[in-house]
View 1 (tube, helix red, strand yellow):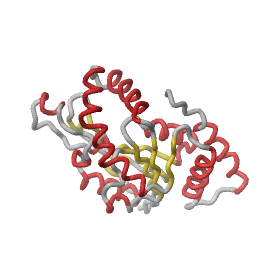
View 2 (cartoon, one colour):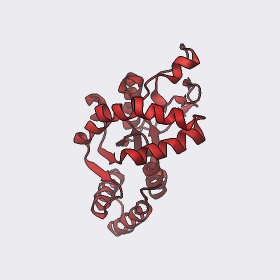
View 3 (cartoon, helix red, strand yellow):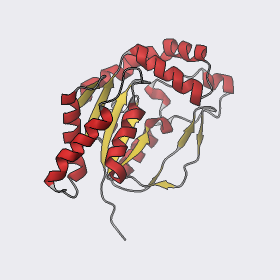
View 4 (cartoon, helix red, strand yellow):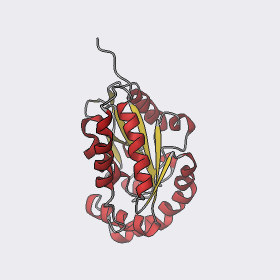
Length: 234
C-alpha cells in the first residue's frame, strides 16, 4: 500500500469580499496540479433543524458558525496527504450536502476562510499564512455582486446583513488575525509583497522534490503577472 505524501497547507484569510477566492483561483492557474482549493465555508454547521426564516437571520460571520472539530480533522487529514470526505454547504438552503466521495489533497492545499487563524490548534497546521487587507466599501461591492448573482439575495438584504453582522464581526474576529499572518497583501498588491509570496510558494512547492533552479524566475514572473492586475474595482 502506497504511503500518502504529506501536503503543505496555506491559509488565505480576509473579510468577506476581500478577494480570497480570486487569489486562490490565480494561484492555482500558476501552480497547476501542484495545488488544490479548500474553503472553510464548507464547514458551516447544518441548520436543517431551524425554520428557513430563522436560518436567514443567523450570524454566519461569527467563528461559532463553523464546525471546528470537523474542520480541524479534515485539515489534519490533508496535511498528512490522506484522502478525506469534505462536506459541501448550500448557501441557498443553509444546509450541508453530503460529501461527494473522498477528496484527495494536492501537495499544496490553499485553504481560504474568514476565521482560519482564530483557533491556535488550527492555526498551527499551516505552513504559510496570508492576510488580505481590503477596504470595507470594496468588500461590500463585491459581496453585493456575489450574493445577488449567486445566492439569490436582494441588494437591500445584503447591505443590511453587512451593517448588522459582517462589519462588526470583521472588526472583532477577522481583522485581529493579521497579527498571525506571515504575509499581509494590501490592495493594490505591491511588487515587493508579490515577490515575497512567490518566493515562499516556490519553497513550499519544491520542498518534497526540488526543481531545477532556473525554473524559479519564470515561476515568479508568471505568478506576479497573474496577480498584478487585481484592480480595486474588481
